Image 1 (cartoon, protein in one colour):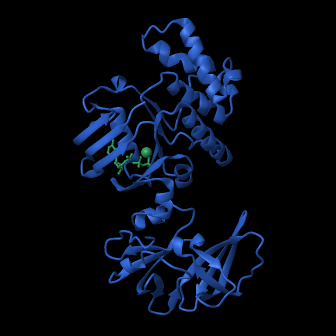
Image 2: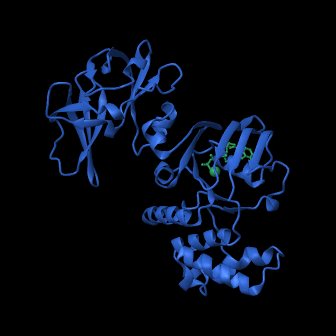
Image 3: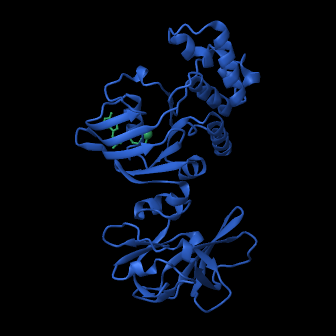
Length: 366
Ligand SMILES: Nc1ncnc2c1ncn2[C@@H]1O[C@H](COP(=O)(O)OP(=O)(O)OP(=O)(O)O)[C@@H](O)[C@H]1O
Ligand SMILES: [Mg+2]
């Protein structure tokens, strides 16, 4: 396994800036997800690393070695794509063994057998080695495709949306499998996805891209709870975030948010509240940034406009006296009806604040 470094790497296609000035340093043994919407530059980044594309500018290193001019087959990486075509006329064993046989590397037959069996065991397909791909479920086929990449023990694994052909339940199961696999083989994995839940659940760190630019590189906790800007805040999270522009009224480490129509108190202390002083701020509230409150002190009156069951939770949509539409995630057992008056409390640790001009986060949490 190896570290991976992008140093001021850019890639254009005609007028399109597919990747702009990327600086990204992946440690050896990390599981890094490249996350972003369609066209944000994720696959371009992966293909540059694989050597399927040439960079216009900048250096790409695998470990100490600059690989810009190293051909793909000499970079010692293994790639698994979204469409993980297995060879239909070969058994699972032969599919996994294929890279060892194809490389003219003259791996002895006995070693091939040992390595395929070991990979089969790690992936839980050891009982299926004699079967053909059409006799496997989608998840099993996916694991065989991974096995074909793993059998070579490469420096880095590159996975481009490898789960997107699977149904929802199986994808979630495969997330755990992939994470467990990473824990066991401890290799460097770079994983492309546009599914934020997938990235949050598996990665040691996540690189979020928008329009060819890296927006933030951080742990799942940082990406979710301390997004660097409004783009990241809105892109991660199951639901859309509510943004609104307002003035901060700061009093020590207490905060009230003044919109044109009303004043919203924040129910608790914010150690970095002072940083809002003098900023024109955009505030962001997710459904989990609010809780239903019993008390009137320090809370916001609102009226329930919609109730949406979401499995174990309920999402309560409510409109404040000043006309702000908010949502609030509550326990699924809560009895609440459209039209009910409620009180909402802003959870300080989950309030997000951004500079109104630049969209950059203001560190209100300390
Ligand atoms: N071979 C190419 N020729 C021209 N433009 C390209 C080429 N490959 C990518 N692009 C453009 O570069 C930008 C980045 O593309 P990229 O494939 O990296 O996006 P992505 O983040 O992987 O998106 P998706 O989630 O849809 O796979 C897009 O605007 C895309 O249209
Ligand atoms: Mg892509």
